[in-house]
Image 1 (cartoon, one colour):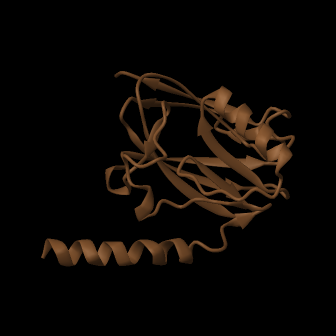
Image 2 (image 1 turned 135 degrees about the vertical axis):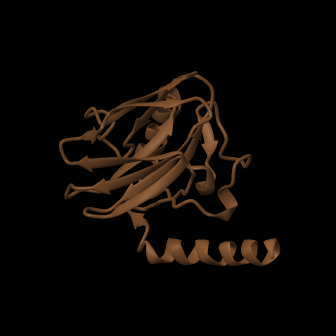
Image 3 (image 1 turned 180 degrees about the horizontal axis):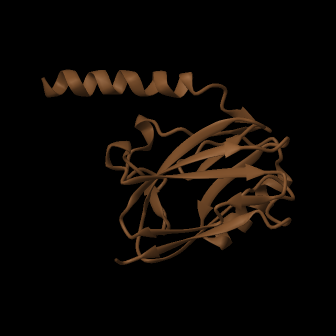
Length: 169
């Protein structure tokens, strides 16, 4: 019975990703959690790792828009907590949410300026066209601060950034 349930779940995940619509915007692939991004894979970093959707403890709704701001732009989570970010782009431009350290975000933003057509799909990021919605699941690591930003050229520089406070309690 367990094998049948696992097989059924594995066959549903790709269908859900397809049902969520076209996930390419501005030359960047977006990410919906899939089987290749289970915890412990190459997406792990100091800020955490791809989360298991079955272990989500809460969903954080977030909006992005052309004011170059995230709402909310400050979030608090517990170390080890698995969170689903449900993100909606309410602007007329493409926007993205990328989790990481500020150093990682600035380095990636610089690469994107040099290669604006670069395509990527990582567990810690989602890119959305105007009006598009999507989500990502992330398990936060140890206590500290995790930054997030929109890395579309010019957006980080315009202040499209936020912080996640990861606490021990």
